[in-house]
Image (cartoon, rainbow, N blue to C red; front, side, top):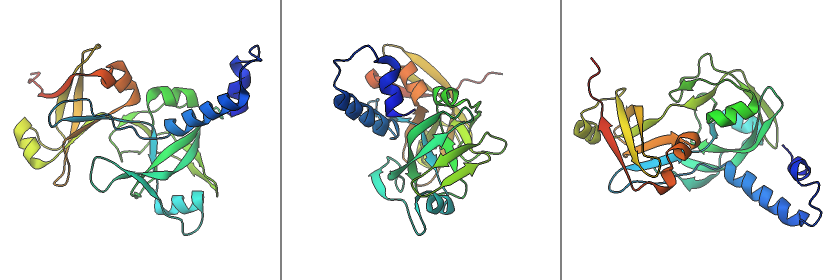
Length: 237
């Protein structure tokens, strides 16, 4: 949606509003909506982070979108070592010709390009996306990515990343889980809730961190949570 569309959609009768001020606010909102948001909301060791809409790109797609020889420019380190939010953003266009104007790219690059959205993002684009572990993109919807130097049409790769927890081997031993297991997250907030079946992802280099998306974070009022805890699942048999 263009800035003009935002301005004219709901403000036609408000002649006294400073157009330049409103444009500045809209641009800032667009800029911030493309960033990944890390919002630690727990005491002690556990970090619970909200991953806003973002995308991962191949080296080839980076060059198509931003120009020959172009590489990603690190802007902000993420909590997991070696990963970062890049300066670069792309426009994501769905089948309804609706778009998200500034979706942040996360680095480093990957073997396959992928877009991770919340359900509300996907609905606005007209996409029916599945919940998948990151990297599991077979049979998923595609979209169009628009950059300053070119366009990439993805035949697949748009998902809602399932909630998950990164942990090292010692964390796995402490919680009694192994890679690929499931664990629950209890969020103590004004909207106390249990988010079940987080995918456990164990790696030697990983730090203990939960990832949920913006829909989930808003639903449990993560911003005002006093405490979050991981709870091993009780056998359902």
